[in-house]
Length: 329
Ligand SMILES: NC(=O)c1ccc[n+]([C@@H]2O[C@H](COP(=O)([O-])OP(=O)(O)OC[C@H]3O[C@@H](n4cnc5c(N)ncnc54)[C@H](OP(=O)(O)O)[C@@H]3O)[C@@H](O)[C@H]2O)c1
Image (cartoon, rainbow, N blue to C red; front, side, top):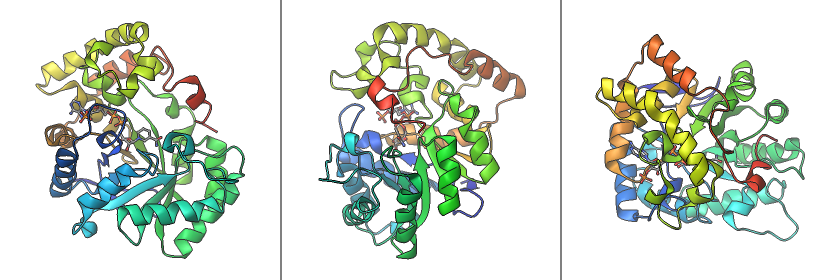
């Protein structure tokens, strides 16, 4: 397994991580048996970065990851997050998601659900507009000092917030959406990370399944699938977006691989500081995604893909309006 160093002084991790969110929420029906087998297969293949959050099913996903890693703790690096209270459905009287008194409570609950005594990468899932970032990261720093957390990360933070956070304690990674159809981070967030020596966890690298070229109509999604609420998957936008896929599918066909693999290979080619964390609950998809690490796209192929998916090409925002207000702050 190829390795990457997360940030200037962070840990070595596999060049691809495993996103576990969809094992419990959002996409299709959960299947805990296959999901746990997928986590085990990831570890066998050398994928050691296992990514979750307390918000995924209000702790359900952390519990699943904890069960899967029982007896295998030393083979994995656990990255979990806190502070996305609206997604988690949590309300804490008097405390918001980034409040310094809430941070240790959230961490203790995650440690308990995961069944571990230390979290490798602890991230702020969404910046709390009600709390200065210095106070939130200050509380996260105290968790490092207490030995409960090894490294710190931010998710969906804006550039200025990343700079301010880094002054309080080293941030080893920013976890934000990045894929062919979500390239806006190339403008500010990614250059900021590079300037500050911060690694990058590219979430939803398959465009939440769109870049697999298997979702060209919402009809293929289950009625309760969360993508139905996302603007890019609304029927009109998806019809437009599906027309973007032809060059991706052509390159995949020429190389006898899948569009998902080409989408991951494009992301890998954007820099060694980028660790994509594709999400799947199927061993077969995991194996295909890991195999994409061996694909080196030519400069012509990279240029074709970049030209076919310029910044802002997708119709529809990444999230519904309310959730869009919580990103990039
Ligand atoms: N920090 C944040 O705010 C944030 C937000 C969203 C996600 N994330 C993290 O990022 C991870 C990945 O993002 P994501 O899961 O939303 O989106 P994604 O990785 O872009 O796509 C996941 C979807 O693609 C499907 N898939 C995966 N590999 C495939 C393959 N080789 N062929 C065909 N289909 C394939 C999955 O199917 P199956 O599920 O059926 O296997 C699932 O429907 C999440 O698990 C989560 O850990 C973080």
